[in-house]
Length: 409
Ligand SMILES: O=C(O)CC[C@@H]1NC(=O)NC1=O
Ligand SMILES: [Fe+3]
Image (cartoon, rainbow, N blue to C red; front, top):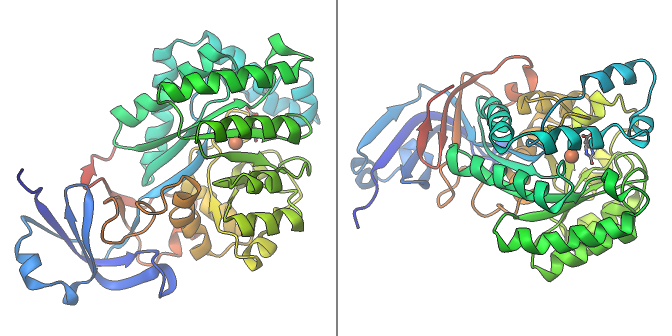
């Protein structure tokens, strides 16, 4: 079998995000790409001449900044309809909780999603994915959670899987049946949890699931109900994640850590016991500044305490129609610094190294390192801290995903 061609990208300022230097920075760097993999990464002067001579393509980047492909590790990209009217109601004083309890919120998007055709759900989700991709996103996690029945949850996961097949994008699918109780199960949450556990087996059998998630909060599911979802996931050998401590402290993060969760997400109400449990389990804290901002939250996630405890912090868009209808992961970098007081380097690690870890991709994605998938972005920027500094500007110049340059849309 013929070996794939080697392409040399030289004259780059590499923010490798590898340990050893801030940003893993290599000023006069080079990448050697073989097929979909990084074959060599380092200072250009150290590149073995014999290896350089094998390159069929030689591209000079004139000192441009290059980072790993960006990873959006928490989205709800597949849904129908929108919630702009709810946005107006909240501006007039209604709370997110009140709207949800009155049957709006997630349930209203479930209604719109169930009546949407597969073709429309795919078209809408693909448009959203391409918007994220235009900013250098090469990996996206996509949750279900707006179908809330065996049929419609599977439909949404199939749409997500199709995005990974048809777009130059790595897609990880997360089953989030325990997002809300659908109207047909009103007053019967435990019966609904039974149904979710049952259809999880079918989804897994069809290859639709990479991880399982739930919404553990006072307006959603209890820790006991969440535990049943986790036990079903464990029986299927599926990793878990959790929407935890977003609106109240249900000690969901500690429960997620008990099950060795890949991540616990939101975390505005996370306490010291939850932080310690996450640190011990190696569970990633996924912070979602878009939801914090859009819901006008005031309680900050405990970033200093997470940092002190050594809990890896990831940042994601949480794109969804109710709490975070934004499609700019770069803006999330700025918000992570401006609102959550993370450093620009922590924010970039949050959408590369730590986001990869939150998706179970810690060995293959998130760093510019030999042996990893060749996902990288060339930026019209000189310094890596500019990525969190500029907002409302897209400085992405060229995107390579799995060794193939993506035509900018
Ligand atoms: O409002 C929605 O449609 C989803 C909101 C989203 N889901 C969740 O569990 N927390 C959130 O912020
Ligand atoms: Fe979410």
